Image (cartoon, rainbow, N blue to C red; front, side, top):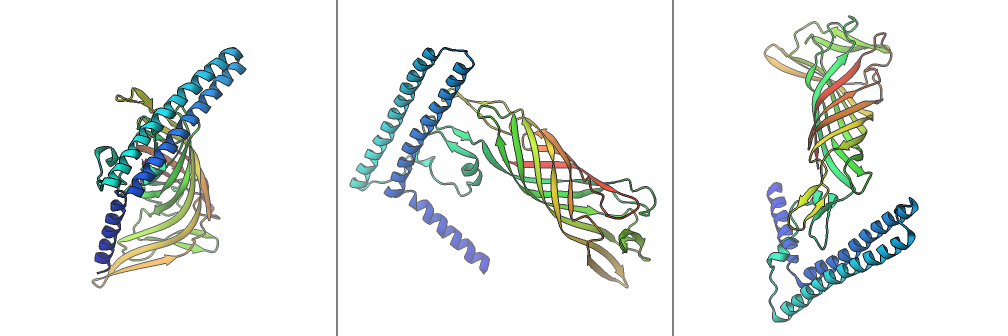
Length: 353
């Protein structure tokens, strides 16, 4: 019943919001926003071009007199673009007023592109629309969801201290979170700083299914429980701060209609080099066994003498949204054991842009 009520409420709200885009006030607000966007976009472009000229003068590539003349030409050019763009929007506003007076207020093809989609998180966060060319321009600071999963490999566990050692768990490492990516230069995708916040899960399993982790004072090791287990594993939940320097080889895209090029990240090969810092939030040992025809599941919550803070290097390399990652934990898994073991994770990473 609750789900039905929620669906009805969402549908009603969606219908109401979509209806609002067809009102005089909503359309007038859109036109006003376009006019403001035209002015600010042209001024921003002019400012960048003037800075380039000033740099050329500073580097003695052109004379000051030539720069002054070029600035005047640029100012006149962008002023014409502003006047042309604003005039076009003023005509639309006049037509809108006439439709209001005559009682005709329906969406036309030009307005359809401004309808608010049901899901527009990435559109709003990562792009803005050039008011004159109509191109979607990618911002310098963008947001991505991150999903990663892969093998968790325990290193240096063959000394005998941990019994038969650990399994290389196929899905023993996973990560879910979001990142911010900042493009260092306005005109190229090549250099980026990528940082974010992720929930990280590590799954550790013994090779011998009958082994469980036990603590003896400050030390932790595996011990045979004495009967057959169906499963034995240790789960670690952490919150992490990954930071990478990303190189993006995506080439500028070409727009046939306007004849302009524009930037789009994650359209080619990418590589990231950096690391992470994480805080362990929760650790539990899960065992499952069958006895007298009944299935039993036991969960033990403990820190098992594990480090609270962890850090290590991390790299990834891939194409578009998919990449292969490798991550190493510098801290040993257990604090005071005579034999230190570390984790190495290898898997697939998805950056949903």
